[in-house]
Image: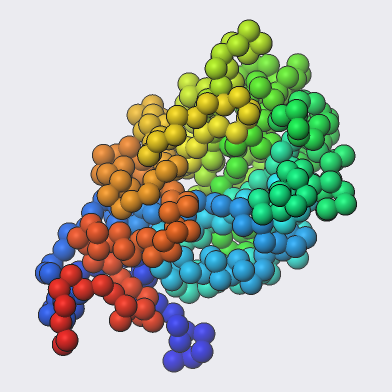
Amino acid sequence: MDSINFYQEQQGTGPGTSVQPTASEIKQGFAPGPTTTPALFTPLKIRSLTLKNRIAMSPMCMYSSHDGFATDFHLVHTGQYALRGVGLIMMEAAAVAPEGRITPNCLGIWKDEHVEKLEQITRFAHTNHASIGIQLAHAGRKASTNAPWLIKVHGANADEEHGGWPNDLIGPSPVPFSDRSWMPAEMTIEQITSIQREFALAAGRARRANFDVLELHGAHGYLIHSFLSPISNRRTDAYGGSFDNRIRFLVETVRSVRTQWPINRPLFVRLSMTDWVEPSGDIPTGGWTEEESIELAKVLAQEQVDLIDCSTSGSSPLQKIPLELGYQVPFAHAVKRNVPQMLSAAVGLITTAKQANSIIESKHADLVFIARALLREPNFVLDAARQLDAFAQYPHQYERGRSKPKHSFI
């Protein structure tokens, strides 16, 4: 066996795949007997890609890049989830332009030199039979802030002294996120076209880095979302005002991205399904709404988008989020009910195997994105199989660490 394949998973589709235990594994106490496959561990086919289970790692900023480059941290951080059976690993938001980073420490994909390290990460994931995606993003008016652990030292906003770009923020309108945020400049039509081109070029780099899935970040108050929401979009031209105008930036960006992203590879869009802001005299709807999200999903289904990743909020500090377990699942269910040709993903306070399996089993979503629970429990997927009375393939190197429902010295 050559050195490249020495650690390669060579059975089935790798760790996290639901399989039947062998007679020997049953005898040794690794399983009580033959098992069934719970909904959470059924495969999901999207275009040419088949996910081995329905558990995805949600894109989470790690603030561990320099000049946008992925580092060894990203290889180790991402690689552990490839080993531990996550069906789809979605890497964090990668900025399509340097001024599109949330912080100076955020990941980027705005230049060709970024591709080499990203390709090393996807190669490791594929070696262990994991599917991997990347989220393309532009922070817009919420850019040039500090990493969470630097806020106490330098404050929330990154000024030029600390690597920020407060004079280069852009948005649909000159409306800051809060009275403590940087003021964005209103984008010209030329800037709109330029950023859409940057999204397309970034998609081409993601293709060359061999990612399986691409997701556009249209949530949490960042640039795409800021065009959708009347809270941040006060334009009176073709990109503001009516629903059709406010979705124009995203729809055109999707079309631009699809020129560089192969038609056989899945394309996701993460949306904030609602702004969670109360109606006011200034904005009678309160902001972007669930009803508009459903109508947008119908449009995106015609634009070769495969899945809506259903998040919420991020447009205003006035938001009132009714936090509870699975509080965003109803939005994923609404997409499934109203846009049957579109897949949906649930995300947000999904913390246990039983909860995640119930979401898939009840057909409230096609995929579950797990975020902080995976940070706390990197073995979430393999443990979930045991908790759901299933039997999942382990990485060969960790097989002897598998839990035994009954103990045996065989």
